[in-house]
Image: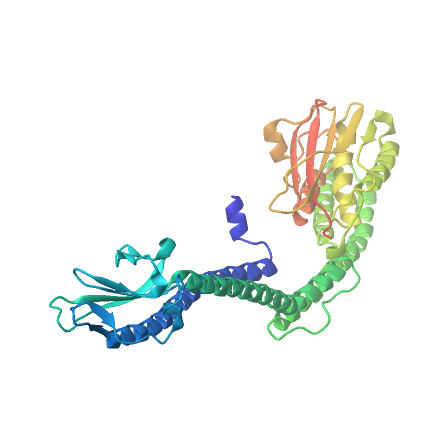
Length: 448
């Protein structure tokens, strides 16, 4: 899992730098392998070219004396052949004799082509050789020119050190330039993030500033979507308010007129008027669920809202002597508009006041993040009769009432559930440890 996370960086900057570092590592590794081999082969070939010149020189000077012994008719051009253990040697070998340079002194060149040749003090030698024929000798004479490889190896080692230092400096430089290039290229996205934060916090209603041509079409579409969204929200709220005021007076008149009707007529009209009122309340509630005009900047503290709702419910249900204990910290915030949060929590707390025997408890519970979305886990539970498992799912549906004797429309829990879902939250019902109903409410935390 750790390796997978490393191979999948979380940001564009990390992805680009990771890809650049990976390719740079491969290039440096390839250069570090190929270039030293090229340097080694080049220097060895150059050294051997010089040795072949000496080989030709010895071939030209090699001869036999009157006794048939191998001899050199002149002196080698390079004085190192005369200096003992100088590192540059030659050797002429026949079946019964050997002639060698003064630089070998009392040593010999040993070894063969497969295992390599060794000189004085077991020096590792670079050699070239050839067989030549001399007068008065029937068998060929083996001629070897050798040079100590230690100087060549030291030169190659120093060049390799310099090469790796150069590659390291180059890699650091390229990575630095890549980082600067990536940072400069991603500046428009950083600016976009800042603008989105301003929109989210309510400082502006659109994305401003100029962006590159690759990003500008997305910005234009986002601004158009934000404008259209805000217009629809404002229009929905205005229309729901207008409808509410328009219907309030006719329904009030109908309710007043029904009271003076005979009982049989009243029995027919009252359910219809109540059903009409329920439909109006439901659809007005759904209109309110359209959200606030600046929903991206929504930020509300639930604790003071719970206290305010509890104070109102204490007056309405004073005869039931129910106590609400609010354990939610005052600095906790949720990304829900204040009126919508009042609608959600108000319906849930009012339901608890209707059914609780004496105690309602509101507190925060630990939870796991859902789809990388930070959520607050709010719990409301009471010591009432509670609801069975089947009823917990059924009661969240529109207009469902498990007890017709208790006043209400059956819309409160449904509206709270749909409002919660509109904010990408979650509402579930279960059995409380107090014996009554437990409401688990997951609401998003404001970003940033």
